[in-house]
Length: 121
Image (cartoon, rainbow, N blue to C red; front, side, top):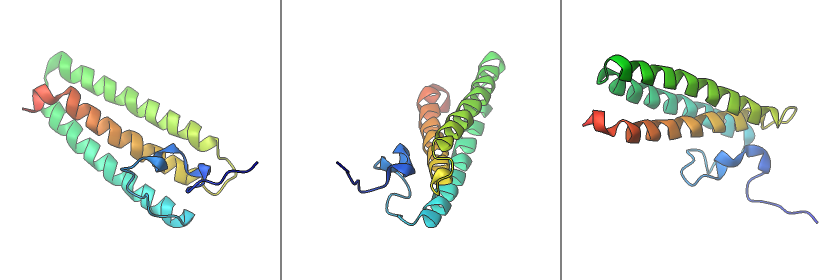
């Protein structure tokens, strides 16, 4: 039995998110470009939020944030590389990779804003 989905599985689960910035793009090359651009925007936003939070912390709090952010970046990159590697040899491997990076980065931004809300007031 063969099942077809609205979006091929090779595009990764991030593409199924209702708030995915490229949800309506279906051509692989265009989708990869869209997700690469979305990843860049998400990274810019995260860096902006990180700098804002960091500017309001001192001492151990600042060091903890810096350490945590560095470890999170390592995790994000390793996790998305592992997901990309599942599609090695396929045309969608970078689509999956950029979708993963964008989604995790967007999530980290939200998480940081919630976690450090007490310092952002």
